[in-house]
Length: 213
Image (tube, rainbow, N blue to C red; front, top):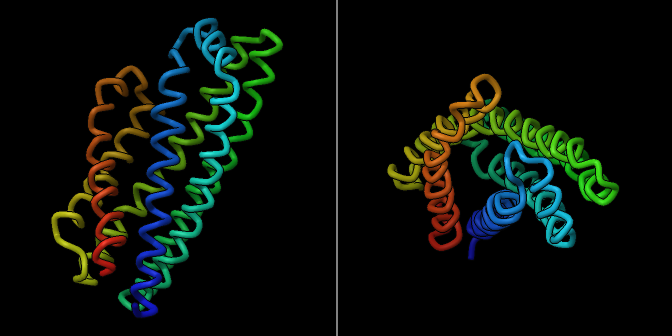
């Protein structure tokens, strides 16, 4: 295996960690425990599964570390195509990872709040974490657009995956803007997040199996 193929597969592995940790923590754990607008029901659910909730924090931290790793690997692999775009894409992904990591501070306070019975404040902190997550995804959305350009120029990734990554960026940007400016419309837009899941999973598998970029 060449040095480049090794780095590409490492990038694929980092991407796999991001997808698995992110889907499990945000989609499976918090998706089942957090009831929007119902502080009491949310707190009851978290109190009944404190260990699981805390494990989701570790999964999110692991995801952020993998995101940092992937940002550096993609820059290393793509900087020969367009150094400025590759650098900007890396910085945007690092900013996203930093915001997601920082937002975990709010989420880490939730177990203590629900244990002490401060259910309303716990839901507020969960909302604060979600806002930080959405702001981070704005930066990641632009990263997806830049990555689509870089991957298109590299010629090593199928066009359908490249277009999927570009579409993922559009979904992330639209979804975050809706959550921040028109939250009443966000729920109806939620099914669109299937596009990023499919596109990013396809890129992850391409990197792992074909080791081309």
